[in-house]
Image (cartoon, each protein chain N blue to C red):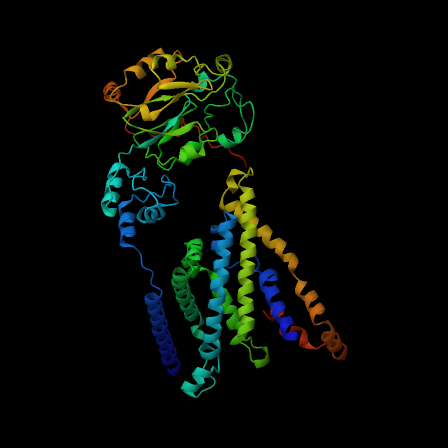
Length: 250
Length: 302
């Protein structure tokens, strides 16, 4: 039950509270570039969610088995549990993202022709989407930098975080596209037309999403209410609050 | 040292692995593309204007090879492109005419009555929603939606009236699609100059006179004189271009001469006579702006 509630908290956190676009400001290029029409924005969001999940799965496998300190592969090769290959993370993740996008494109082209047509140019564009690299790095932070094995993220946590991050991206870009469609009919001052008003809109949207801050605490209380209440009665200063909470872990 | 070697080795192994997977995927997921599609795609101009009715040149190429569409639909490439496509596909080509837009309005600003100082958004689509921008509810509004729709700089507003530059026009039909009053139609140009009706007003003659100095009054002079080529319907002459024969224009010329409002015009590419008339006129080579006297038209709204 606690595991499930952790997953729900991770998902909610990645999708709404720590929205990739509106909280961390990653993946801004497609957010500004492809948010002219709602249907295109939704297509882009779906493509990102699709690729981000695959990239997260691959990067978790690589981080867990190869890159982290004391990873099984390096221990077998060098018999030295202190070898840390996490210096390679950026280059490996970029490598993995680029090849998985290529692979997905070929696969979709062969077996899902209508989907391939719907994605169109977006699929190769995702290769350079920093939201995906960000998700990989976030996963690395929770796999290789953690000393306590109990707090280390498993493959399921990573996948849930990445997929709900993609869903959060879709929500943000679709809302933005809806606003921009309405904005076309507005009398915007000449100096602000185009990129100016778009960035201001994005900023206000980010402010609006700040309203989600703290939702996870309330939800945590509801989900884990009984055990937490019992725990805090026994030990008021227990650091259990921060145990597996992604929000406060950063 | 050993870490560097290990890192290098792991990257190398990863690279080989990924290359192998992608190579395998490329072979396994290979999609057969008809070589004729590529050939047709290469023969098309690549303007992606949508004049053929498809989204882009690539989609039109697929449709042509699949036989869903005849090879002469590309208006940009014209006859030579159609011939090339027909050659690739091995089909014969029917006689086809280039379609070019025609503006069914002939009134410049001074000819239009009841025109008000419209302050709203400067676009025909919005001005068309407002009553009273000008007296005529059929004719050209002159805000230039067609000008911004044109990718080829082939249509301009000249003294309030949209005017097609037939030297530049490729016939993609973007202007005809965007015009909110539907006064632009695509006409098959069987000769360099075609006879067209440059008015769209369906009202009775008296009402037309009240809003326009040059509008068609529906007098039926053309119907009487052309021997059936013109037929007046809803106070406007209707043309049957199937009956139009560029070599036998006598009856049409008679009708054109008899038109009291001079609304039947031959328009199209400039004739040799026009070129002769403008031969001696000199165009300035290059006009340079003089910043001391030129007023910047940008309105500051800060």
